[in-house]
Every structure is written in C-alpha cells, then in structure tokens.
Length: 147
Image 1 (tube, helix red, strand yellow):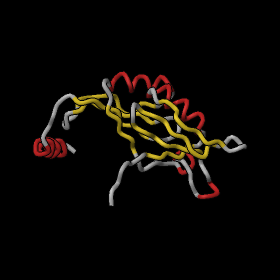
Image 2 (tube, helix red, strand yellow):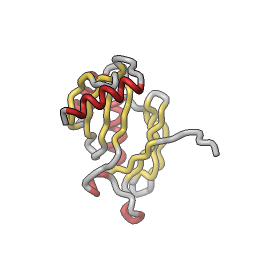
Image 3 (spheres, one colour):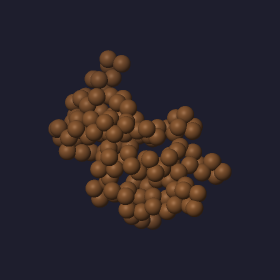
Image 4 (cartoon, rainbow, N blue to C red):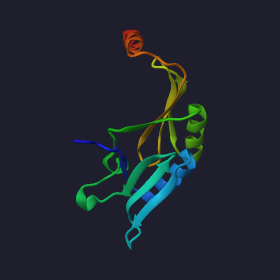
C-alpha cells in the first residue's frame, strides 16, 4: 500500500465565510469550490503555499457537523511559518481568538495558538533551534516536573 498524500478536511458552519477567513488570516488561495443551488458548499480546496486544505459546509443529514455545532473539536492544525508572531497577529486581526501568545518552546519552536471563528484550533510556529529527539525528551521530562 502506498499513501500519496494526506489532507486535512474541515467541516464548518459557514464554509464561504471560512474560505474568506483563511484567505485573510493565512494567505490561502481558493482553488476549487463546488456549490449546491442552495449555496451550501459541498467541497472546497484552499492552497496554503503548496499545501491543500479541504473544507465543506456541515451536512447534518449525514451527521457531518463542525465544531460550533458539536461544541468541541479534537483536532488542532499546526502550521510552520516564517514568523509565528506576525501570522498569529494577522489571524487575530482577521477574527480568530488568541488562545496562547507565541513563546519559545522546549522543542525548538516559537509557537502560539488561535481558535478560528468556526471552532478549529490552529497552532502556529516557526523553528528557532534544531533539537534532537533525545534532547527534546530530556527537556519534556524537565518541563513535566513542574506540572
């Protein structure tokens, strides 16, 4: 078996508004939109600088609901960028809620997080240091001592 690609596929209440948000917040470019006569988006694809995010409106008749409808999400999308602070600031300006300001982390990344207006979590970071797996585990163990 060969896996050629893996795509995140989001279900949201208000896919058209989500597409607008993702283009403003993250600079994504819409590449495909399939719209029903009612206006509901059955499938859309956004290009995040060569990486594809798929999304669609909710389809409650098929038990396909977004985070706002179910009241939670179990997924966080993590994106690596050139400047985490700037992207977080831009996402908040576009309507995201700041969950954690960017800070330097033990795993060699400066990262923070936002929640988009559709309920999905986004972790946004950039590399500040290359850390070996052994060193990362040592630092993680040390960080967990204070928990």
